[in-house]
Image (cartoon, rainbow, N blue to C red; front, side, top):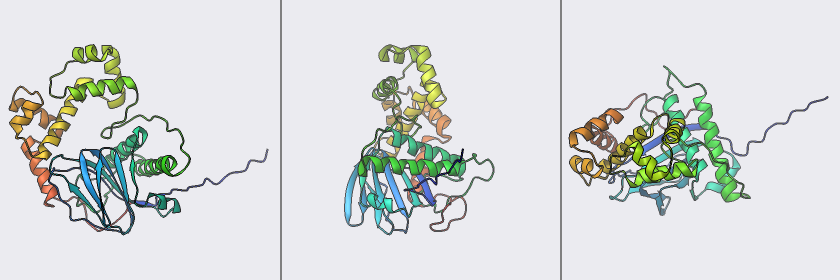
Length: 314
């Protein structure tokens, strides 16, 4: 038999990555704005912001994603009430298909949220430094223990994200398969998980037990533990603690409650127990976390690695 190869088409090809960020902003954070000669996408993971694109100002809520085209002035404005979390990825892509994304504000679904989560996970393994530093201008490779293939996976996930969005919004709609989610940017792998997660979100101010969760979500103890071990590599109570601390971080950034009030709102028996749990998860006390966020906002956080404008990883 005479086999013949076929050269695969690449209608959306990412040439290089400029930056990858996951920001936890204070509710009163302000950014002076910028423009550059590459693409940038911004997705709201939590909260709400106003995004400036050229002369337009748009209100974006959780799940909204906006694309800033090359040389377009853009800015992020918080509303002073909610402390948003954002995924921001800057990249070079010269494919003509990217023209469809100019001026677009879209909404991500479960699969696309999971892809963004995987990009963040791989970036944390493949690069040094903090992904929450808005003033870091260069990705520095992790030379000590780089994850094999991290950069290639980032490119693949980003291209898949762009292709899925293009199919859904600009071409004939195609069914999007479910994908195992990461965290942050939680997807919903099945209705059971969805029901459990909603229950924990609704009772974030309580001290839940495995028995209580099982009883109120109609899930057996063994299935509950297996589900969270498979998805997150931890037990359900440990995951619930992470949810509490994540909520605490958001409340700290909102700057409307003191630490005692936050501990009380989340159902902790004392400020001391809350502080211990917070430090166990974040390796910082609540006060240290609040200070680090303010320093980042004021561009006074110690930078890691060389800082050169607009350098990319290709």
